Image (cartoon, rainbow, N blue to C red):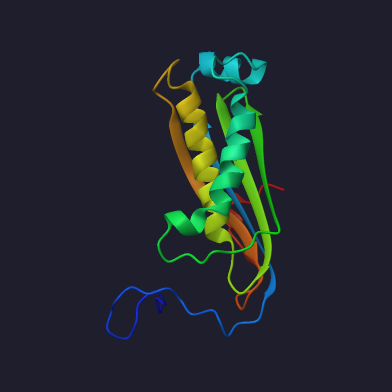
Length: 162
């Protein structure tokens, strides 16, 4: 396996995509946060003291996707065609699943943007609810699938649920 974020002398570098053609690219990422019953009830009823937790987390996720290149040193600044952040509440497990889909027409993929959006959305939930209980658990952040570019469609079969 070759790592392309290093030059011939082993120094870190941004990958040169200037000669690549722009193609349609898409990435889908997911992650979860496990919360207490009290937090779950506050989020789903919209009674959290800091406001509509999932609405704020949605905005935070989209903003994070747009600014990924500022957070991850070797990422390119990519013009995003779309970014959607969705949540699924799982009452029995007291979990909230976050899913982010990012699309672009660019010379490089948007996996990092989708993963960053999920991470920041879940961290926002933590931040907004930590006054109730600090024992939340964020985890299972992963790329579900991506498409576009030379590698085409990649699916993480372990996580496909539909």
